[in-house]
Length: 387
Ligand SMILES: C[S@@+](CC[C@H](N)C(=O)[O-])C[C@H]1O[C@@H](n2cnc3c(N)ncnc32)[C@H](O)[C@@H]1O
Image (cartoon, rainbow, N blue to C red):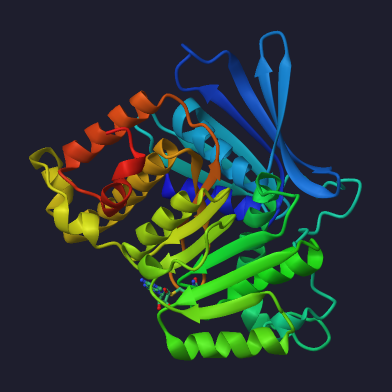
């Protein structure tokens, strides 16, 4: 399935899909549509993917963002259908999935020419190339003419990808007052500057943004850059996430690649502030790795590399379930980071009801006990959980 996931990610990320058809139900029971057709459409100048579900007597349409389209396509192939055709301007990809989920992808010459979406099909980035954007110039990503340097294009795309995720959660942030945002473990703060530029300058929101990190030299550099850019409501502080207690209320908490349980310390703060939005990309994971054990999982856990990956995934599953339990609707999304690892998971949690707490608690505790783990986030949030 990995090759198929890569293909899906590539055609959506490049905006190269012209059309796709998914067919041949894996099993007929429980699904009442027989085929799904997907095409890109432009809605209010934004690229969306229209999914047409073919039932016996009707067609139901659903429009999806890029992220949603990736998830929907993965689900349709992994759970429901065994055949697909994805047409792009470069090639047609014929996909066959066996009963045992073995994927074969046949690449053929393109059968479709590019469609005109009534406007242009060039990917609409949140930050556009062509006009110099001061923070990108300062960070050496753009030149003074607003051209993105070839070797920095990946970084430019990553910044835009992050801002797309922020754009998606804008409706969940309060609109009637200045926003307070905390970036925990901000490091060199590329994305903190991007966030500030996008919200304060493009979206004209009044902000109070704080970046916090353990490293004094990095923080000094970030403060110098913020003052050079006249980003007056962006400040950087030296400190440990777990000890930070300067603010009473924060609307959005961002934590990107904070190591191990530093991510959990940031999630705890966010929940206690009742933050409307949490965006978190976890980093290296040690805690569960040292705890997890269950003889039933021995074929997996006896291999260091599998144990490491499993522990990281289990940790994020635990975090998502605990956030749901503490009043959030949590999604795990793919986040691309060129500098650290090729692929990462972004936890996006938005204040809201995730359903029956007793049921969530049962699911959580069964999973935790099955793995014999004692997660940091549960321990520090014990008073917020239905124990
Ligand atoms: C891998 S860097 C990521 C930097 C930045 N967020 C990014 O994504 O580019 C992780 C940062 O988290 C900081 N960090 C780790 N543990 C921390 C803690 N307990 N409190 C504050 N900062 C922490 C480190 O100093 C480091 O700068």
